[in-house]
Length: 485
Ligand SMILES: [Zn+2]
Image (tube, rainbow, N blue to C red):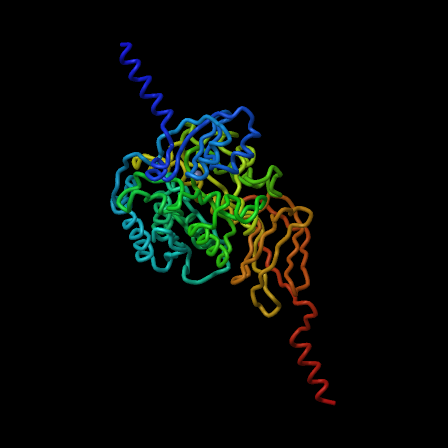
């Protein structure tokens, strides 16, 4: 008995005291660990050294690559090393072919599935290759819309999953969402409305090198970081900490997303993760609230409430304020994609933590689908509310303008119209507002008393005139008068 106890004791000590030497990093790329903090303010410095993954009020769970961990060790926290969450066996196969969506695809099957969707629905779906990773994998999107090969004046929504490669709750479910939208177009009126009214971009694997870390055949062995062991969700330019908040060059996965959102204005986006169960809204990088804080709370609440309905209030997605939190209130993050999109790209991005388990069992994915499907549709439907329309010159040419809500917008909360279609959407809490449309070289236009109601979009098309503009008819009349003298 004593011997058994001793053996157990030795085992647990060796587990906790596992040496995180260079060999460990060679094998694992990164280390997953936890440690207690006694004052939450400590997190504000810690978050600049390592990737905080979760904070429950006492215990911090975090990841670090070798350089980060060595730096963090100097600070002197005593840490407990945890097994990599990606090192669990999972069922592999073709989830779409089997129809049950309860297996993970190989990398090749994943690529094939997206191409199959586009081939099966050529008028509704196309595949966009947004870039190539360090190991040569593709960052792929399926785009879904009526007339998908034409840029129509429709708002764009982006779903993106698994930028932390080992957080796979939404990976297969995003392919399923694409399949669901396509299969139900023209059948289900709600889905038909979404596909007709929006351009929907779905990116199931934002960090395929991390997800397929051990090779294309399996997601077992997935890691948080990319092939360079860098956390993509700390690698974006930050509104507070500047262009390179993590001290690393922008990674291929980061650059792909930056390039894509330069050529396509995403009005709204959702960024799916795992390791917790909560809807996290901006900002992550500053304590001050976003100008649309009341709106963020409404849409986050709507997401969580619908999930609670479908999970029969079984406790799923109920952390913090019953499933929602302001980012900074949880823990501050610099270099995250949410704040980058929301601040620098004038978008609206949520970080949605879908599962306490990171690499979820394949058999659990259909359950997550049941819980979240309606919320995913409803999130897209938010883009069909607020105020929206098309901004054009008097000649009918679409114009990219800044749309400012008077006495309301600050810290980049204004939005822009699309440079190609001229369409804009300003989602906002229900009330009455004055909106100003402005662009260099044009006289600004202010429209007062715009009523925003719940669940419908207030239509507002705007004509914006170049400074000193003279109507064409008037010009020709004048010249005729001159020539007639
Ligand atoms: Zn994550």
